[in-house]
Image (cartoon, rainbow, N blue to C red; front, top):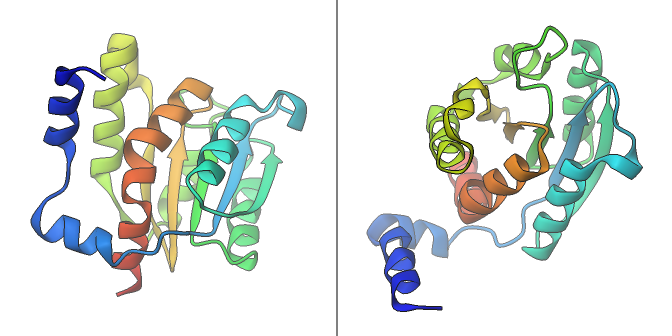
Amino acid sequence: MGHEDHEHEKSHAPSGAVAEHRAHAPARVACYIVTCSDSRARADDASGRVLLQGLEAAGHPVVGQVIVEDASDAIRGALKAAQLAGARAVLFTGGTGLTRRDQTVDTLRPLLDRELPGFGELFRMLSYQEIGSAAWLSRALAGTHGELLVFLLPGSPTAAKLALERLILPELGHAIRELSR
């Protein structure tokens, strides 16, 4: 790792209150993964696999993983299943685009108690750095539903990995701690 990499890391390191909050945050958060797709099966669910591997590598237990069709009833059912499984964070992948079949955002946004607009804004900014202007076509977002932290991610494995590594994992425990207060 060169000097430039260390400088970049320092500029993203938390300080003050954020560092203290992270110090008291849970290190393990029960997570649930939902792939919303009309065409995916477990064998070709690359985004679900990326999320599962990333969460487990970071020490977060995955208490459930399902693939549901991109339909409102199935999506709502998956959210309920995550609650029943004891999840504290639910990561939905797929259904955040512009096609008529992309139902994830339209289904879940009305169920969110609080939307966290910074997540979508930062995701699109980071995505723009990687893919350019197509980043604004994503409707990725995050919010809360009761005691759950809910993330709505694009179905691309690259996008799922970006969101997980750059945004979700660094703040997951901290966000759950804040949600529990």
